[in-house]
Structure formats: C-alpha cells, structure tokens
Image (cartoon, rainbow, N blue to C red; front, side, top):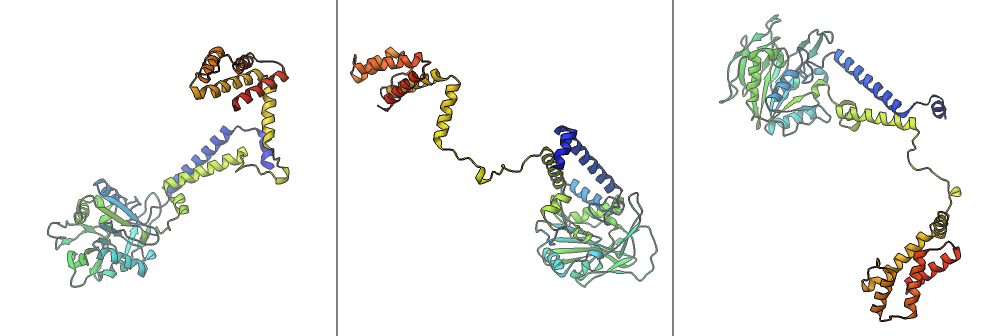
Length: 409
C-alpha cells in the first residue's frame, strides 16, 4: 500500500526506474573495482597476484606458450589426472594440508604427475602501491610427504639480493637445467635415492625424486617463479626447463588451495565470485526491482471458489448468437449456411461449390438422376433466398432451419 501511494504521487516512468537501477549497479561495480585495485595483492606466489611477489606472470607466460592452465582451489581437494605438471609455489603454513589432502597429492604423483614445490620458511611481501609489507610463513612440511624437507641453513646468510646457484645435474637425459637465482638461506635435506639438481654454498638447494610413475622436484626458494624473479633470464630458463618435462600443450596446474582459496563449489559461490555469476546476480536484482516497482503479479489472480462463476456451454452459444444479431451479421450468417450447404451436397460428386446456384443444382440433379424434381426446385429457391438475405428475424430462423435440415440429409 505504501509503495502504491508513493507511485501515485511521483509518477516516475518505468524506463527511468530501469535507467536508475542500471546507474546504481554500474556505480557499485566501479566502486567494487576501485576497492579491489587498492586492496593488497593476493598471497605471495599466487597465480592471481600481480605484485612483485605474485605469481601471475608465470601463469600468463605459460598460457601464452600454448599450455593449458588450471587452478586447484575448491573443496574437496582434488587433482585431476589430466594435469601433467603441478606448481605448488610458497604454500602457506596457515593453510596446511590435511592427511587426506596429502594422500590425494601423493596419489596424483604416483599415477605419473610431475610436482614442482618451491617454498622457503619466510617470504617477505614487499611494500607496493597496493598495501603494506607482509610476511608469508611457508608450509615446509608440504614436501615432507615425499621425504624431502626444507630446512634453514646453519650458515649465516644475510644477503638480501638474489644469489646464483650452481647446477649439479640435468633434469634428465634430454632436458637441461638452467642456472637460476634464489633468496633466503633455506636448503634441502634429501633421501639417498633423490637426485641433487643444484647447490648453493655447498648445500642442496634443488632436488628431484622419482615417486611411482611420477616425479617430485623441490626448490628451497620460490623467488625464481615470482613476478620480480621471472624478469631474470636465468629464472625464465628454469621455468622453460621444467616445462620441457611434459609434452607441449599439456595441462599445467597451479595450487591455490594452500593460498587460502578453499570455497566449496556451489551456486552461491559461483554467483559471488565468478564474473558470469556476478552478472547473473545483478540481472536478478534488476529484475526484482522492476517487478516490485511495476506491481507485476507473480502468477494468476486467485479467485475464491464462492466468487467463481461457472457457465454452461449453452450460454456461450446464446452469447455468440446475440453478438452476431447485435452486429447485424444475419446476412453474413446466411451466406455461411449457403456455402457450407453447397459444400456438403457437392462433395460426394465432386461438384465445385463456387458454381452459380442454377448450374450447381443442374449438375447435382444430373448426378442424382432427379432432373426437374420438386426437391431440386426447392433447393434452388433455398440457395437463392440464402444469398439474397433478409432483415426479418422470423425469415432468418426459417432459412437457417431449412439449410440445417438439408445438411443432415
């Protein structure tokens, strides 16, 4: 009632309401974008973060080279067998994997997947235009499932600049491992069956181990894969070397599950996070505003049984007759009777009903061998009367009755 009273006073056209709703939605979208741009980047080495410590550049570069990319982020934690190589870059200790999640990752490697883990104990989130400095505590246990642990070196390494590591061994017989740079002082502790790939200051910094049908490569620094580190030619060559372990055009995965992206797959999360879902949600909001403002009913009007009027078929027949009489359509009705009568009588003998009445009756009489009979003369008179019409109600009823009787014969 309040809405109807407001509408009766201000008289706003519907197109103005729609335009206003579109403007409000546009302003809300722009405001959301501005807030997002001014917000801090995502977690370090996230494939969606484009700060200097983000990992967006390596993901986009891999896509540009013709590889398919896939992000692992939803609950439950699952790694598709179609993924050939999976990057786990600076997994956060805040989002450590459960035993079931570790089992899923181990299952995937045993079935032939290539896992690349790059992690160090702390990774500084430098000050950028999008937020203050932060520090990411790495999940050092993420490689422990495969008996290769990341540890802090006992030597004092206070260098804040990237340091070049020494290559000890190639990845395999056909793939050459290129030199790369690292930050921090983390090193690896590996089992006897692991292959040392690179060292720094005499300590293992990168190693590879065969696990079932797959391989696990652990690098004790995610710096080479960061947006800043990828600008170094040596680090870019490292990425190319790792990609050469799988066929061109393979599917490369990026684990965002340990960066905190753990939404359960649902319609609600799709509408709130996916661009197409957000567009659908805004369209539904706009539609709801339009329906409420225009006062549209959602469904048919409900009429109580005691107020319903049930009509019998004869009422519709009488109503149509009265309508035809009030409209002065008596002669048109008689012409319709004449047309249907000639069609009914001529159909068995395939006589054209469009013939003149005299010719029609003559051909009908010839087919029935009743030429000159009183019935033929009566039929001709009836057809002529139906064509001529009448203004008398009594004459109209008589002619209609005779035409109906002829059609029954």
